[in-house]
Image (cartoon, rainbow, N blue to C red; front, side):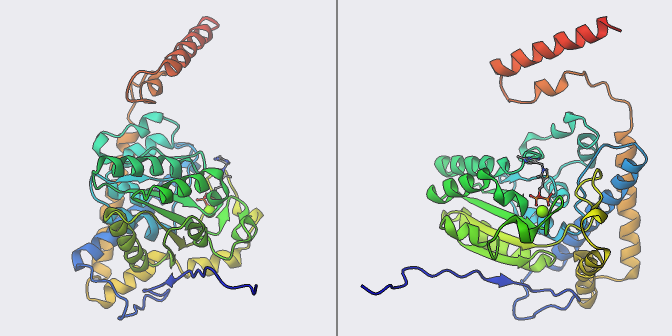
Length: 363
Ligand SMILES: Cc1ncc(C[n+]2csc(CCOP(=O)(O)OP(=O)(O)O)c2C)c(N)n1
Ligand SMILES: [Mg+2]
């Protein structure tokens, strides 16, 4: 019997705003002017907070943190499209999206100074899951939340973010498979920033695209220019609508670049060239978004100057608040692991307090 083709798959790619800020009018989404401006404002705030945090860290006033510089056009538009009851399950490079969802700047600063209290958001209804340093597990959390939303018929959607490196984790595959089998309302955004610490995208996986990994589990996929907020917006709009309509999960691969170090404990000069970085900076998202807004008559130098002053003011205010002395007890994090009591945590809590007492007795 001759061999015959039984299945055929394709991976579409979408770019609407190119690196020079030129828009393809045939593909331009219909986004109200004030929403476009708001998008740029969030991206600018996230960039400013990154820059300030880097200075604080270098001055010994903040712990290690992973900058989101260059990736603002991924998480910001996605978070703007999410509704109040939706779930935001991030990794650790979605600062812009977290701010859009309502995470206070001070929470970010506290968390990256080693205080778990930064993960205790003032409003539980924000539905932002804690930063997931354990690579990949947020995919399973989001799949579970999406499954629950479908089971309860709430109409909520779970949106998960993961890096290119994270796609090699078992959790990524298990979560995607589960979500697809159960038609869970979940959207997975792979932030392909070309690096997993010092491992380049080329040696991370032999797959031609990261998007195609979703095809294996039976979900619609797309690869977009992740430095193009219009392409991210369009793809995320489709995927979120599909999920909310009961049509199951989708995967979006956003191709971007980690412009800074992995975390402040890393030195990328050891494993990549300055020339590569220069090329990547030429494609960064803020500049092209600004050019787009200018071409539409929505932005100018005066507005840029005023926005810079505004975001700097906001960040400075947050830094002042963050550096105020706190009264947090050393065992405070134990109170926030589960919403209700849990024997395992109670036991660990008691052990911890015992150790604290012993340390104190030893002076
Ligand atoms: C389960 C697990 N394994 C390893 C690590 C160490 N680690 C932290 S970040 C990272 C690379 C992540 O790369 P990627 O998923 O591409 O995300 P990016 O840092 O580029 O945003 C690794 C291996 C971890 N935190 N968790
Ligand atoms: Mg990466």
